[in-house]
Amino acid sequence: MTGPPPPPEAQDERAQSEGARDDAEVVAQSLEHPELFARLYDQYAPDIHRYVTRRLGDGAADDITADTFLTAFRIRARYDLTRPNARPWLYGIAGNVIGKQRRAEVRALRALARTGHDPVAASWVEDSDSRVAAQGPLAGALASLSAGDRHVLLLVAWAELTYVEVSEALGIPVGTVRSRLNRARRKVRSALGADPAFTLDTTEVA
Image 1 (cartoon, rainbow, N blue to C red):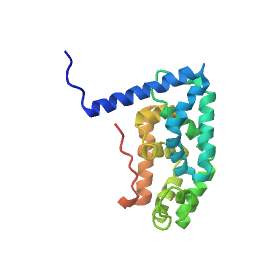
Image 2: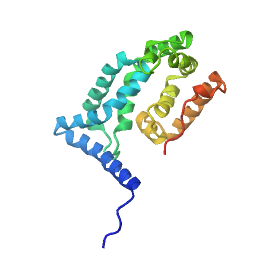
Image 3: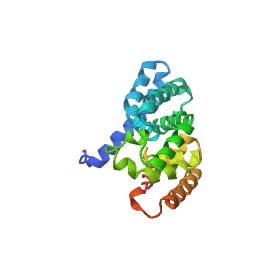
Image 4: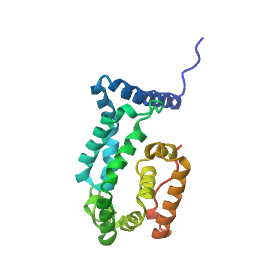
């Protein structure tokens, strides 16, 4: 005798879990069938591209996204197959590639903080006259962070990774993620004051 079907929420969770399990399987199978790795690109490249665009602008996003997946393909034999979801791994690789452009990112953030307008921000907001100008104080606060603190903050706020996923992406303990995030929050809040318009949503995702 069969029971009633699970509620939609449970079905969605099961589907996500099954999809996640496929990531490790795809990586493993791609060692003998390299063309299968394209499935990860199809699934995650749009997210990586959006994240890179927010950090470095549209002009750099195509190349960095491509470099991220080329690097992932080259080192896929080192992927931890016990981790069913490849998303944190890919964000970690993207972060390493972005790190090579750290000076460009900081220059862009400082320019935005100084002028209220910058092509990087203009490439990911809809209204470059009002919303970009509103990002000026936030850009200055982000530019003041260390590379490590900024990376953790933006992985949580913009990539919407959980603390555990950030830990996997960066290869650091969860406790270090929390301490870096708390330090970054304090600096951003201090720089921005109490204005809620510039508050980054860094609530931990369950």
